[in-house]
Length: 287
Image 1: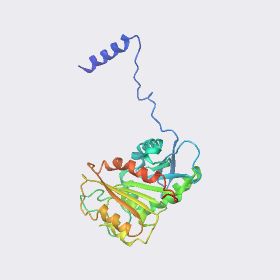
Image 2: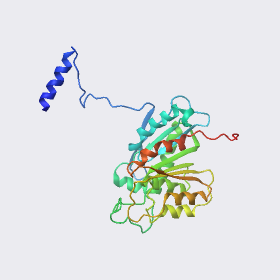
Image 3: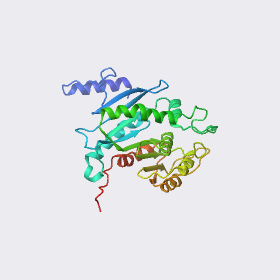
Image 4: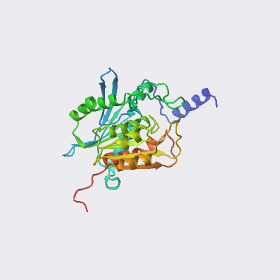
């Protein structure tokens, strides 16, 4: 059926029952919004503006404050994480997941993301043919300082948070940055690294994990798909890094996501990341 005939048929159908059907145009369409959410715009020391998306639970916070899940690549992950967390918290008796605050930082353009999510490795350049080859690198520590010194004070001013239950979660270069933050003594107590770029810096993460001092009380979840391809210069494995972190008193685990490629692992690991961030803490008097 031609487009003209289809339009006529739809018009006749709408008039058949005596009612007129109207279809919204782009100008009149109302976007869907997430309740109890806000968007902050914060500027880094080098003048770059970041959008920070925050979602919080209904009602007053618990006495110790809300746990917080910090999400990298926020524009991609904010909505799915918020709705998944709320759904799991709604079934708390079965899921074991409490309510919490989600803070998602927009990564912005690809060059900016690569700069922000890669640690500095003197003399290192990403090999030709690998992801992000030829792009500026090494802004990871400055970006982590921005989260600590600019974003976190804004969050703690507006929401009562449990500073002992803050989780950083990232994918690919974001997973690399999460593990780098762990090695550098970041303020987070839990870390979720999904498909982390272990090849970066000729195995930087593996070296940093081996050089860490004993750090009890930290928890780490690493996840990767069984259908991921390794870029040139690959080094280390999730299991190896988890085992190394465990020798430093860190509760570290690595899981394989069956049937997942590099592009799908973040969504596949989202519920597990939320469970680590918002899971009900074990009672000290539990036997």
